Length: 379
Image 1: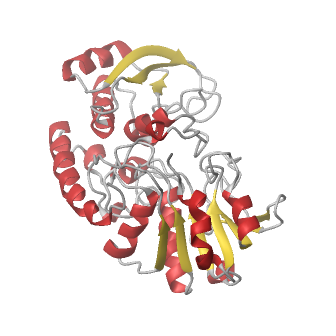
Image 2 (image 1 turned 30 degrees about the vertical axis):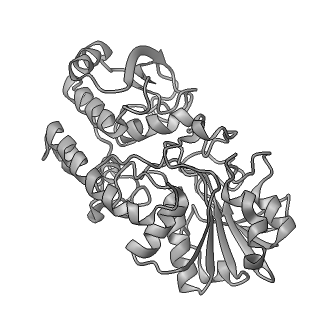
């Protein structure tokens, strides 16, 4: 049976002996009996502080909602927010600890903020002389496939900080190794590896019980859809937030679904089918308004190319609907959200055709595949 990193903690007693411990986690930080990493570390180590990523350590905060510091009622530990005015732990936040641990289920997508909480925490650990420990977990979409265009660092943000493709094909422990060595963070890093993990395993193949990593990734299959439809966060098309099928449905009150479906039939995307539906989001874009939309049915996870599917779907919708718009930058942001998600302005400005984008995806994927192999921990 597969064991995740936290389930092997007894083999690393010396690492934690006489050390004060801090932990970055959320509800996915559990063993296969749903015992939380918070409680495990509280029992087996000297747990001092907790650090909350987006959605909070208990997962009770919606996407994008900023957090303040607070006290965890169950343990009495101080909880510092890493998704508010501070995203990188300060020296003050780390002064009471010797080890900073990370145990969060990632989804395998460049857009997902937890992997930048990881990077910032590693940087802070280096700057403040703390050992950084990652309890490794499976990649929801498997750690054997790469797909996407590389992020242009001119568009660096909290949804894309390093030159990664959208689907990077690494576990979070392997990603930490890549950050540390390839991007020169150079912290004192310890990855507590999984047992009996193979990189071809997606989450369903592990046979483990699933805990949603965030409110809008309610099922393992959603992670595949998220890689495709997260792009619509940068547009006036709903990505399904406020429905029971976030990222598996997209739509808008004005969407011409029939013409979009006709074009989709011509391109014959692999491993996915689409059906028309109507839905009314209860929050987020088009709240309370009936939307005409499409639902993605992933029929073959092995052949499905989510990133190419997302770019193709967006290109067709833009061409077939004059009401389609890209959203302006959030707050005082320099770049529109779509540029941050795609990792450049090429899509919004139409400086590359869809075929040129796909060609770039194939090229960048191959380059990153070769790079990432240096950081593999599993066969």
